Length: 400
Image (cartoon, rainbow, N blue to C red; front, side, top):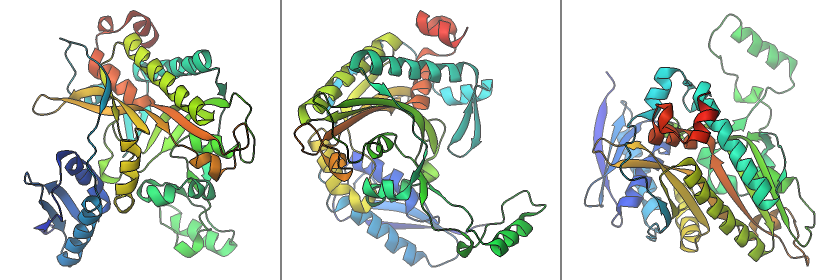
């Protein structure tokens, strides 16, 4: 039996409830041996367990550094609800994912990866088509397609490795070395599990999987000048963000589908585009008959990079999230998850990729993204599994 030892560290300052929730989620990246990280009600004591027979003190010190990074420069910025839609008196399915799995409409393949069938796939396709319609009819967006495989240099220029190194998904291949390839082949002959190659058998890492589609949109416009109307682009594809032990159901996927609208141009044009896209998403809630809130938010930055960047996003309302109800917890309270986001980036990407707005200054940019699987989960959680409870137009698409 694996040894498990309880331990604690003291936080350098009180941890509020929202930061405690984020800290407990981010704790997945501390160490494979550190488990069950919890913040006590006093907000000062962090409890955790250390597995294994090795040195527990080194793990405790790592937890202490993690807690310090999460808390010492944290500036509380409460979430601000800017819009809300309520469906009064309607029941919510407690475990919609479990029912989808039971019916065979969602098939877990590996942690963070699922296959979709039947009505679950139909909802995802209906959402993508609806979002593409919004992009086309409301914004005159140009449709584009981009590969999921991106140069590591692209994400480096976007600041991904400095802000979200824990979520990166690298793609490796064997170096062009006949003897090394033969050793790898021979080691794997007749095996049903991978015999990993040594690091020296791999070529340098020069590719990774896109965590967001908008990065490819900017890269495709490097060293270009936009016209007086700027540019609006829409695209759909697969995105990849590693979530470690947080991978669960449809809420936390390593690979997921996304539809985006990307705005580029002067500051006001981008801000106006985001405002209009937010209203379009609220109109979607009415059409899809879904309950949700739009709130200020921040991205899940790596703890050592979090404090300043999270405050920068939330305090200036550079990021909004549309959170949809997806079930209920053990106490009966509604659980929600971010199913769409609405972001402005100022001139960061315009500068990084030398994209000029009219007049020659670096272009501003913003993007709106819909998480397809999460939205689908919210539909089954809120409408249930009786087709008659669904909006008629959607019922005809999903259950025909």
